[in-house]
Length: 153
Image (cartoon, rainbow, N blue to C red; front, side, top):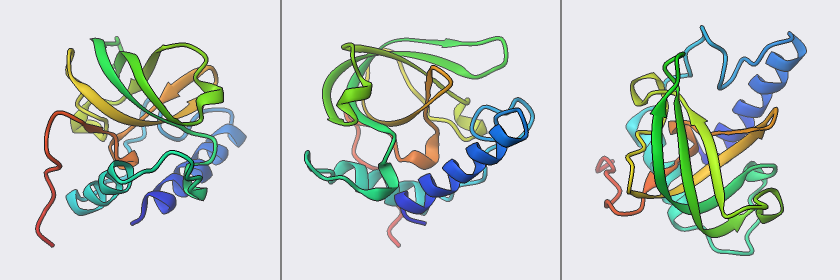
């Protein structure tokens, strides 16, 4: 599954959730995120890693892509993580990133989220929804300080 397809599916699920009066993706309290294989996650990460400033991939319209360092990672009462990042480089959607800091929400890694660690640097693709930014594993967000851990096939 390409990053464009993953984001397109996410947008459809978000719109469907909004039409029903609640978020279906990625913040529905009870519904798990769709499973993502290691191969799909790696493909999305490779696309983000190869991103060149000035590109406008259609699957990323409306989102933001940036490199940033985590200042704080806290668990919320609902189990999701609240992640505070210092933005180092704005790659896409700079008009939505008015500050040099951003707080986003992600599910726990075992629930389809990104495993953010304080003090690490990440390339993050996030989607703004109802005043918050959200990311999850299928977006391809990854740790810049670690090599991509991709399966051979």
